[in-house]
View 1 (cartoon, rainbow, N blue to C red):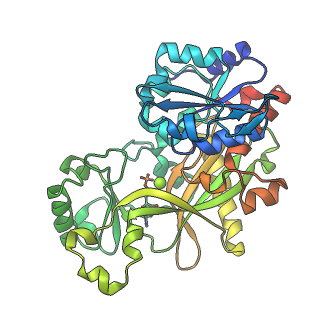
View 2 (view 1 turned 45 degrees about the vertical axis):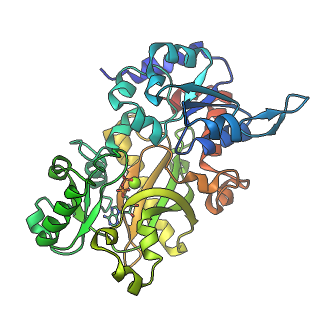
View 3 (view 1 turned 180 degrees about the horizontal axis):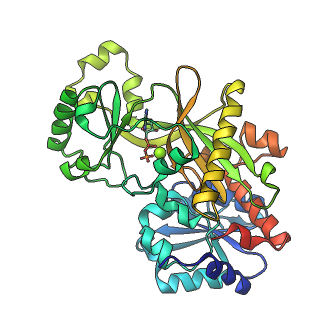
Length: 385
Ligand SMILES: Nc1ncnc2c1ncn2[C@@H]1O[C@H](COP(=O)(O)OP(=O)(O)O)[C@@H](O)[C@H]1O
Ligand SMILES: [Mg+2]
C-alpha cells in the first residue's frame, strides 16, 4: 500500500533541525548538490559502484583549514552495488538517521521500482511521490490523461497503425537499453510496417513493446522544455515560477541534422533512422509573446495535479513541448520532478530564474531555498511526501 503522506511527514519530527539534501547520483545530481551547498545546506549523493567518480572524485567537496568548502559541492557520497539498494531497510534507516531529504530525479524513479518508492521507501521525498508514476506511458492514468483533463494541448493519439495519415512518432523503449528510447517516425501504415519490421530485425525494438507503443502526431517544431517550480509555501497566485528552458541533444538525431542533405542521402537506410538517446542539453529563451501561454499551461498543470493527485505538484517540474508554426506549445512529455536538462543553469542560474530572484537561481538552488524556507518557517512538512 502507498505510504500515507502523514506517515512520511511525521518522520520529520525525529529529524535534525538542518536536514541533508540527498539525491541519486546521475541525471541532475550535480545541480541538486550545487544548489544545496549554495543555500548553506550539505549535500549527499547516493551513487552506484562504477558510476561514482563524478561525485566521489571530481566534484567532491574539499575543505580548507577553516573547514569551509575550498572546491566541489558533493559533501558526502554513499556508494551502493546498485541504485535500487537505496530502498533496502538498512539504507533507509541510515538516510533517516542522517536527516536526509531525498530529491527525486529520473535516475531514482527509473532505477528504483516505482512500487518500492510508493510502498516501502520511508524517507521524506522533496516533491510529489505520487506523481512519479504518471511518467509511465503504459499506465492507464499517465501524464497524457492528466494533461488532457487539464485542457493542455497534447499530440493527437493514433490508436491503430492503419490510421496513420501524416507524420507520426511511435514511442516505445529500446529493446535492450530499456531506459533509452526505441522511437521512430512514420507517415503511413505501409511505412509503419516496413520500419518496425526493420527495427525489430536489427534489435532496436521488440514486437511486444510495439504492441503497446504510443503512436502520436509528430509536432513539427523546435523543442522547448520548460523548467518550472511550484511553491505551496506562498499564496497560490505567487506559487508558479519559470526558472529556465532547455533543449536536448539526441543521438543520432542531432548528428543527422548536422549533415547536408546530399550526405544524408548517401547513408544506408538503417543509418538514416535517427535514435533519440539524450546526450546533452542546451539553454534557450522563448519569444516573449509566447511566455504568457507557457505560464497558463504551467498553472493548468499545477491545478490539475492538485485536483486529481493531492497534494499535487510540489517543487520542480518540467513540461516538454514542441512549438508549432504559430508558436503554440504542445506538451509531449512531463517530468513531475526536476527535469533532465537543468544542468544548463547549474551554478550560473538562468535568465528567467535570475530575473525573478535577483541572484543566480538554478533549479537545484531553488529546491534548496524551498527546503531552507520550510525549515525556517517550521513548514518543511508541506513540501515533502
Ligand atoms: N509528438 C512529438 N512530436 C515531435 N517530437 C517528439 C514528440 N514526442 C517526442 N518527440 C521527440 O522525442 C524526444 C523524446 O520524447 P519524450 O516523449 O520526451 O520521451 P522520454 O519520455 O523518453 O523523455 C523529444 O525530446 C522530442 O525530440
Ligand atoms: Mg522526455
